[in-house]
Image 1 (spheres, one colour):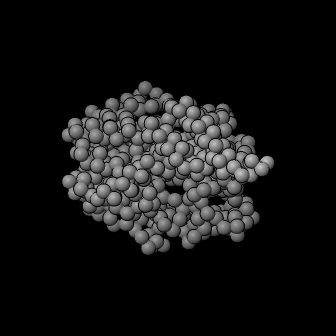
Image 2 (cartoon, helix red, strand yellow; image 1 turned 120 degrees about the vertical axis):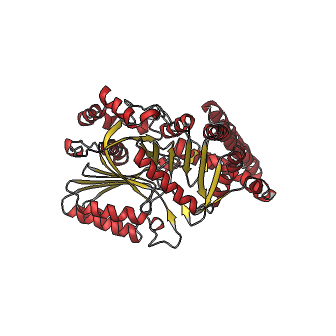
Image 3 (cartoon, rainbow, N blue to C red; image 1 turned 90 degrees about the vertical axis):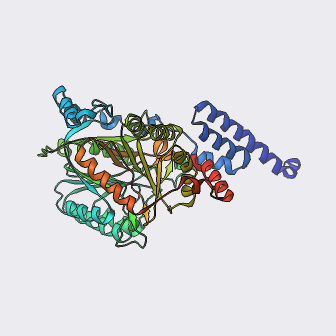
Length: 482
């Protein structure tokens, strides 16, 4: 005991490195992205104790894990029937090809993919800020007759959040089934509001609570989705959370974001996706009835897929969809993202596209809401600029939109950023739209944002200070851990 007491620090250091080397071996066997692997190894070996804590909190891999099983929902007879009804026949596939004209093969459409069924009869409304979104949303909530489902990364009981939660409590007291899933890391709701929610009959569950020791190691895997389904007929998806930050009338800093309001067949995959999250977060065996998948009378032809990705999917579906869209482009690629911390595949695809004389433009914020993310993003821009990609920094406020439009016939709006976390770690959802009028509107919105952006000059950017480049390099190294 005397020896232990006199050499406690050396013993702890030795124990740290035994555990660290064990973790390094585990990381190497996982065959992760080399950059991510190197980042974790450096943290583990250079920062005693802190490195182990970082790895425990953020480094564990749960993709394909049984804890995220979707079978409880997908195996239910009602859901199986809905999935079957969403499968397109040969005639409908030909109709999609006709809608896309000569560029119908731009994106390999995964008609029969379990994760993202192609739907045809949809009405889609593009929303460009939180003020417009919440105005539409409150109108739809007031008209709800059967159920309201919400799944959000951020819900705060500030001005807009309190207004929304109060309205949901009111609808619950009217007999409407209201279910809410909140991410336990992103959301912040007071005990008083939680009590009111419970008393009103609203069912609310936190996604992977982090207050318990058994779940602490999973705080890295967050539900970053923003989904609303009302009566199985109306769906919302996009980048706008429930917080005053997203509402310009309540926010000092201008916030530009993009969201979609959907009516039609595509609401059904959104509903199924919500139920898979609800099943996991609630731990309850919910019997799903036909009432959650009503018929609709939408006649518009807007081909649309709901693509989801996360630790419950075998592949990085959204990243792969973006990659395929970029590599199949023949004319233009316009991307807006608040955080540009991509993998090598996306960087290479954009470089090749630009060097092939395609019109490739990317908008990122000039001033981010995270200094680490800002410097990490900036560290990647020189690679784009030297390949001929036009990069713009949005300077009107903060741009949080996650959009892409390719060749004027394919567009995506959703929750996924162009970063490691969205591609590989978080639960995300994007709408993939294959319709020219919608893509033209999305392109016009991109061009409007260009007017509030400053184009980066390659030579000036290349000559930024060594101090700035050093900070960017450190932030970039930390990027896989963000």
